[in-house]
Image (cartoon, rainbow, N blue to C red; front, side, top):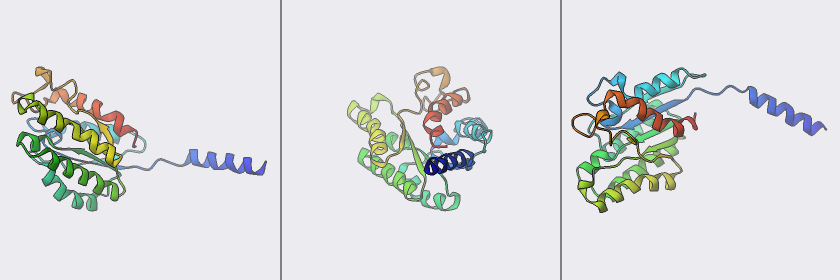
Length: 201
Protein backbone atom coordinates (compact mmCIF):
# COMPACT_ATOMS: atom_id res chain seq x y z
CA UNK A 1 0.00 0.00 0.00
CA UNK A 2 2.82 2.35 0.92
CA UNK A 3 4.61 1.55 -2.34
CA UNK A 4 1.47 2.33 -4.33
CA UNK A 5 1.10 5.65 -2.51
CA UNK A 6 4.70 6.58 -3.29
CA UNK A 7 4.19 5.73 -6.95
CA UNK A 8 1.07 7.90 -7.06
CA UNK A 9 2.91 10.81 -5.47
CA UNK A 10 5.83 10.40 -7.88
CA UNK A 11 3.47 10.34 -10.86
CA UNK A 12 1.71 13.47 -9.63
CA UNK A 13 5.00 15.30 -9.20
CA UNK A 14 6.16 14.21 -12.65
CA UNK A 15 2.94 15.53 -14.17
CA UNK A 16 3.56 18.89 -12.51
CA UNK A 17 7.16 19.13 -13.69
CA UNK A 18 7.29 22.01 -16.18
CA UNK A 19 8.52 21.34 -19.70
CA UNK A 20 11.82 23.10 -20.30
CA UNK A 21 12.22 25.63 -23.07
CA UNK A 22 14.41 24.26 -25.84
CA UNK A 23 16.66 25.65 -28.55
CA UNK A 24 16.31 24.45 -32.13
CA UNK A 25 19.27 24.91 -34.46
CA UNK A 26 18.52 24.80 -38.19
CA UNK A 27 21.61 24.33 -40.31
CA UNK A 28 20.89 24.41 -44.01
CA UNK A 29 21.32 26.05 -47.36
CA UNK A 30 19.29 28.53 -49.42
CA UNK A 31 16.01 26.64 -48.90
CA UNK A 32 16.20 27.42 -45.18
CA UNK A 33 17.99 30.75 -45.58
CA UNK A 34 15.01 32.14 -47.51
CA UNK A 35 16.63 32.70 -50.89
CA UNK A 36 14.63 35.03 -53.15
CA UNK A 37 12.18 36.03 -50.44
CA UNK A 38 12.30 38.07 -47.26
CA UNK A 39 14.05 36.06 -44.56
CA UNK A 40 11.09 36.81 -42.29
CA UNK A 41 8.85 34.93 -44.76
CA UNK A 42 10.90 31.74 -44.73
CA UNK A 43 9.78 28.48 -43.16
CA UNK A 44 12.38 28.81 -40.38
CA UNK A 45 11.01 32.24 -39.44
CA UNK A 46 7.51 30.76 -39.42
CA UNK A 47 8.81 27.97 -37.19
CA UNK A 48 10.30 30.54 -34.85
CA UNK A 49 6.93 32.27 -34.53
CA UNK A 50 5.14 28.97 -33.95
CA UNK A 51 7.38 27.67 -31.18
CA UNK A 52 7.62 31.10 -29.54
CA UNK A 53 3.85 30.90 -29.00
CA UNK A 54 4.07 27.57 -27.17
CA UNK A 55 4.26 27.15 -23.42
CA UNK A 56 7.06 27.28 -22.68
CA UNK A 57 8.27 29.25 -25.70
CA UNK A 58 11.15 27.62 -27.55
CA UNK A 59 13.94 29.39 -29.42
CA UNK A 60 15.11 28.92 -33.01
CA UNK A 61 18.56 29.70 -34.38
CA UNK A 62 18.82 29.80 -38.18
CA UNK A 63 22.39 28.91 -39.15
CA UNK A 64 21.57 28.43 -42.83
CA UNK A 65 23.70 29.90 -45.61
CA UNK A 66 22.71 30.11 -49.27
CA UNK A 67 24.94 27.95 -51.43
CA UNK A 68 26.28 25.93 -48.53
CA UNK A 69 27.27 22.29 -48.95
CA UNK A 70 27.41 19.42 -46.49
CA UNK A 71 31.18 19.85 -46.34
CA UNK A 72 30.96 23.54 -45.51
CA UNK A 73 28.28 23.01 -42.90
CA UNK A 74 30.24 20.17 -41.32
CA UNK A 75 33.15 22.55 -40.75
CA UNK A 76 31.02 25.18 -39.03
CA UNK A 77 28.68 22.91 -37.07
CA UNK A 78 30.98 22.31 -34.06
CA UNK A 79 31.20 26.04 -33.37
CA UNK A 80 27.43 26.44 -33.72
CA UNK A 81 26.88 23.59 -31.27
CA UNK A 82 29.32 25.15 -28.82
CA UNK A 83 27.72 28.61 -29.00
CA UNK A 84 24.02 27.75 -29.07
CA UNK A 85 23.94 24.43 -27.19
CA UNK A 86 20.81 23.30 -29.06
CA UNK A 87 18.42 20.64 -27.87
CA UNK A 88 17.36 19.86 -31.43
CA UNK A 89 19.37 20.16 -34.64
CA UNK A 90 17.57 20.24 -37.99
CA UNK A 91 19.82 19.38 -40.94
CA UNK A 92 18.69 20.62 -44.37
CA UNK A 93 21.59 20.10 -46.72
CA UNK A 94 22.83 18.14 -49.71
CA UNK A 95 21.03 19.86 -52.59
CA UNK A 96 24.00 22.01 -53.56
CA UNK A 97 26.33 19.02 -53.36
CA UNK A 98 24.11 17.09 -55.77
CA UNK A 99 23.70 20.01 -58.18
CA UNK A 100 27.51 20.12 -58.37
CA UNK A 101 27.69 16.40 -58.99
CA UNK A 102 29.55 15.55 -55.81
CA UNK A 103 29.85 11.82 -55.07
CA UNK A 104 26.88 10.47 -53.15
CA UNK A 105 29.23 8.71 -50.75
CA UNK A 106 30.81 12.03 -49.77
CA UNK A 107 27.43 13.68 -49.18
CA UNK A 108 26.26 10.76 -47.07
CA UNK A 109 29.48 10.71 -45.04
CA UNK A 110 29.18 14.42 -44.27
CA UNK A 111 25.53 14.12 -43.22
CA UNK A 112 26.43 11.16 -41.04
CA UNK A 113 29.20 13.12 -39.38
CA UNK A 114 26.92 16.10 -38.74
CA UNK A 115 24.19 13.98 -37.19
CA UNK A 116 26.71 12.24 -34.96
CA UNK A 117 28.28 15.55 -33.86
CA UNK A 118 24.86 16.85 -32.88
CA UNK A 119 24.00 13.63 -31.05
CA UNK A 120 27.33 13.69 -29.19
CA UNK A 121 26.53 17.26 -28.11
CA UNK A 122 23.30 16.01 -26.55
CA UNK A 123 20.89 17.16 -29.25
CA UNK A 124 18.13 15.28 -31.02
CA UNK A 125 18.39 15.39 -34.80
CA UNK A 126 15.92 15.86 -37.64
CA UNK A 127 17.15 15.14 -41.17
CA UNK A 128 15.27 16.82 -44.01
CA UNK A 129 15.37 14.81 -47.20
CA UNK A 130 15.86 16.37 -50.61
CA UNK A 131 15.44 15.27 -54.23
CA UNK A 132 17.02 16.49 -57.45
CA UNK A 133 15.76 16.70 -61.05
CA UNK A 134 15.80 13.45 -63.07
CA UNK A 135 18.16 14.91 -65.68
CA UNK A 136 21.05 13.92 -63.40
CA UNK A 137 20.35 10.32 -64.30
CA UNK A 138 18.22 7.72 -62.53
CA UNK A 139 21.15 6.04 -60.81
CA UNK A 140 22.46 9.24 -59.23
CA UNK A 141 19.07 10.73 -58.31
CA UNK A 142 17.87 7.51 -56.67
CA UNK A 143 21.12 7.03 -54.76
CA UNK A 144 21.02 10.65 -53.62
CA UNK A 145 17.45 10.45 -52.34
CA UNK A 146 18.22 7.23 -50.45
CA UNK A 147 21.03 8.71 -48.37
CA UNK A 148 18.66 10.64 -46.09
CA UNK A 149 16.78 7.55 -44.91
CA UNK A 150 20.08 5.70 -44.51
CA UNK A 151 21.61 8.49 -42.42
CA UNK A 152 18.50 8.77 -40.24
CA UNK A 153 18.42 5.01 -39.66
CA UNK A 154 22.10 4.79 -38.73
CA UNK A 155 22.11 7.80 -36.43
CA UNK A 156 18.64 7.47 -34.90
CA UNK A 157 17.55 10.82 -36.32
CA UNK A 158 13.98 11.75 -37.20
CA UNK A 159 13.44 11.77 -40.96
CA UNK A 160 11.37 14.05 -43.15
CA UNK A 161 11.57 12.15 -46.48
CA UNK A 162 11.23 15.18 -48.78
CA UNK A 163 11.11 18.78 -47.58
CA UNK A 164 9.53 20.04 -50.80
CA UNK A 165 6.77 17.42 -50.88
CA UNK A 166 3.75 18.86 -52.69
CA UNK A 167 5.72 22.01 -53.52
CA UNK A 168 8.44 21.07 -56.02
CA UNK A 169 5.89 19.83 -58.57
CA UNK A 170 3.68 22.92 -58.32
CA UNK A 171 5.00 25.71 -60.55
CA UNK A 172 2.89 28.26 -58.70
CA UNK A 173 4.83 27.52 -55.51
CA UNK A 174 8.30 27.61 -57.07
CA UNK A 175 10.41 30.60 -58.07
CA UNK A 176 11.44 31.08 -61.68
CA UNK A 177 14.66 29.13 -61.15
CA UNK A 178 12.65 25.97 -60.44
CA UNK A 179 14.75 25.28 -57.35
CA UNK A 180 13.59 27.62 -54.61
CA UNK A 181 10.06 27.77 -53.15
CA UNK A 182 8.12 31.03 -53.16
CA UNK A 183 6.98 32.87 -50.06
CA UNK A 184 3.54 31.28 -50.49
CA UNK A 185 5.09 27.80 -50.17
CA UNK A 186 6.86 28.38 -46.86
CA UNK A 187 3.89 27.43 -44.70
CA UNK A 188 3.72 24.08 -46.49
CA UNK A 189 7.40 23.46 -45.82
CA UNK A 190 6.84 24.10 -42.13
CA UNK A 191 3.82 21.79 -42.09
CA UNK A 192 5.97 19.08 -43.67
CA UNK A 193 8.67 19.44 -41.02
CA UNK A 194 6.43 20.02 -38.02
CA UNK A 195 5.25 16.46 -37.18
CA UNK A 196 8.82 15.16 -36.82
CA UNK A 197 9.96 18.25 -34.94
CA UNK A 198 6.97 18.49 -32.62
CA UNK A 199 7.66 15.03 -31.23
CA UNK A 200 11.01 16.26 -29.91
CA UNK A 201 9.72 19.36 -28.12
